Length: 265
Image 1 (cartoon, rainbow, N blue to C red):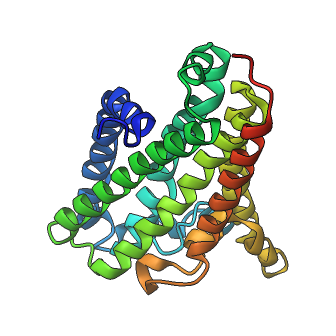
Image 2 (cartoon, rainbow, N blue to C red):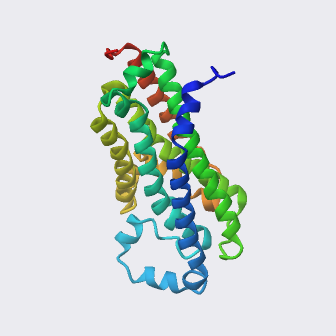
């Protein structure tokens, strides 16, 4: 029994303190922002503030629906603060999975114990995705706890759809770091890939929001795939799964490359 998913279990055990810290961070962000909605959004004050801002800025920040409870939760947490927090966690964990371990020599020790390279990538990737899934689940639980007291009016099914979209988006940044780390073995490249995907996704969505002429950019933005059809308002849609498809491709490419790349042992 001890031989079942040993690397996955070791990654989870070694990373529990970090996971606890990120869980606390998610809790803090949600409990800080969502209870403010009745004071600002519920009485129209938030919308009045938004109306004073340049329309281009409002569209860039996806604040156009912030006057409603679901729109407020999307704009403040899932689309911004939560996205930033989980992207940082995802890129860090994704980089540590392969690239950081290879640079500091720990990967050589792991491979010297007779485990397969594909096993290393698969089990460590699974550990990263499970941690991210935990944080997404925590967000759902907390939002539902605050839903009524904060007068958000979010439907549970729509919230689940949003959390799934959220998880797919941040998982993409994690697997970009894992995949590039597996191909190059370099921490800098892995961090750049993960963070670059996040910046690319957000920036392309912001540009696409500026005008009808640029709206085609949404088709190429992972951020738009996740949130373009406002799942927190409208529920499930097909583009949510595009990020998961890219995640699978990145993991497959990383797995194939890592199995064949020369890693000194």
